[in-house]
Image 1 (cartoon, helix red, strand yellow):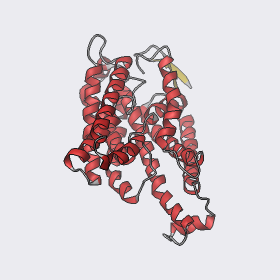
Image 2 (cartoon, rainbow, N blue to C red):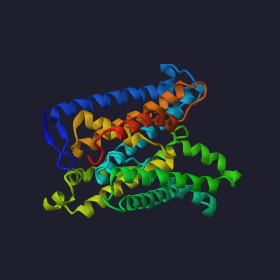
Image 3 (cartoon, rainbow, N blue to C red):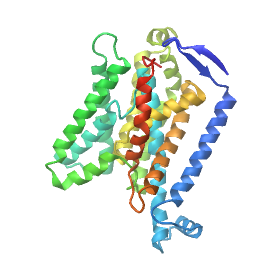
Image 4 (tube, one colour):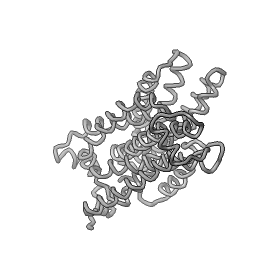
Length: 346
């Protein structure tokens, strides 16, 4: 294990040997597999091993078997949405060189939410695929707006200015969503429930529709890992190394927007996963995005799945949506990050 000084921040950055990184990746994967098993077996209704096996065959003979069958798509959706948010958070933090970047904090999730709600209320949006496309467009507009506002004035897009711009934008977008949905009694109830964020209403149809968008977002994001490493050195040094800074930043941002928009369309605006996960992964494996992005995907999947399981357990026989649990976990972490002395850049 070696250390070097980050050119952008002057802070020592730990580099861990690849064998240590691989060991952590295997450990995270094992934990996630355990969470998958727990997600299938744990819920408001207790189930036996025979009922789990029966559910795999497609049987719906008893309520317990039917309940297990409904947990399969819920588990898969929790995995892919959590992974998407984890990777998107790591990419956003790399693109902006901002340790406070997160799809929720920067207003990207709420941009997708407003686009969907406006589409439903004003344009009769009803198709699931339409939700995804509209959410991606809303995410993109919100991301560009927040970055533009945060870049104004002396010093450019500092972490504090981006966080303030994102918080203000999120608050405004929440108000717009409320103003649109409140007079519409036919959609307001569903909108309020969806805005909490969760994977409780998952279906195989939703998983199959969102999968191509998430796959595209994952591929684009992973292909930009080396570019994100260059951007971490600063724009001038990255350009000196032959990196086309604007193109690299734009492509990486596209991957994050695809992931955020698609995830929000099917699960609602789940906050803090994209903030907590990349920071935890950096402590384990360092700042190399070629490792950080896959780690963030696995850890994000595990975190959201764990949050969903906790929500089922602590309120039996009712459930608490995963978005509430991740907020309870993420808010103290966000406060701790803000209180750190060096948050100017990664």
